[in-house]
Figure 1 (cartoon, rainbow, N blue to C red):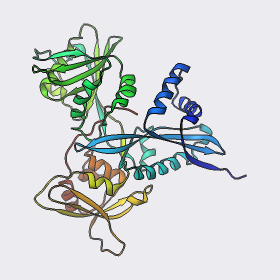
Figure 2: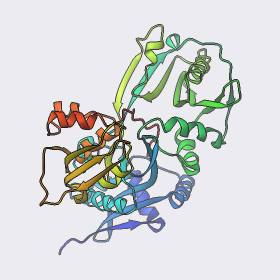
Figure 3: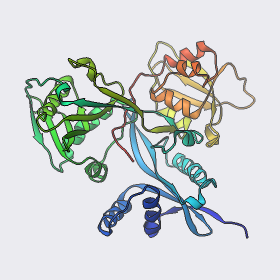
Figure 4: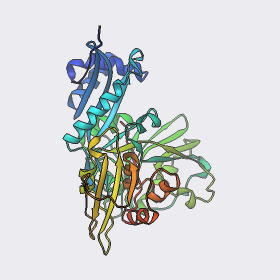
Length: 397
């Protein structure tokens, strides 16, 4: 008898069976009360959920969260892939692949020009076009090596529950990076509140304007900073002084910051423990639509560059394109007909194209790694039009 496989959307009617798979796959267990809270979030969160059914039995699942991200200071609609899971007896049968391919098509139809995910395996998701786009720098600092306390002119206020006071500061900070989330009330309530427990302190400068905040937890003689947000150098220094005031309670502090952070340079003894960890992956879902929104660097001239994109999972991205960037930095990506002459082109896969436009890696570096093909002069020309920005994601899904 032939096996029947169906990929379909799931909803609250399938909550019990999807939660059973999630708890098994991610090795956690929730009480009846916790499941009720999860169900409330499940019903309210803007998400498209997918189930792969084999002979009417749920075999695999995934979800695409309807999110937004900052790129170049602009807001892009983004599909956040999460909760990918398969029962062991159905693994290695291509079910997740079918879900991912269908989700890409629907993300394109929904105007989500880019997608993020947290991989269980980077190599697995590279096959489907996602590529590393951001990493964390983690510091572990012994108490006697914390930044020196300074006198600051502002003040701190402990905040409980009122995330509106934090959100304006967060958005101003997050928009400086490529790949940070745009947070709404739902995200603060269900994601930040639950995933980042402890204390929240908001910093005001001497004029009374909020300029930064820190979310942190003290437990077992360790201070864990969940979120460190600052809009200027005085706020950064004040928050570090505030944290250093906890020295009598702790033996060490741990914190995750953007990869370009240079705290050790400011320390009297910079030999603190530092770890760089690749974190999330991204992929452009719709290359033409993405480029139309993306701001390249302005120049005193326009550029026309031929690009050959390789995208085995999204045929609308696969092929030869003409990239036109005008002097202001506005751009368009147009598919070339088979009959049109193809001059020298930069050839690269969709994952590499994503990482380059996000600013995570440069085209010339990819050329050194033999990850792209093309005339080096053409490569340098395109790289000169790509803005330099740090990628950072202080969230998880």
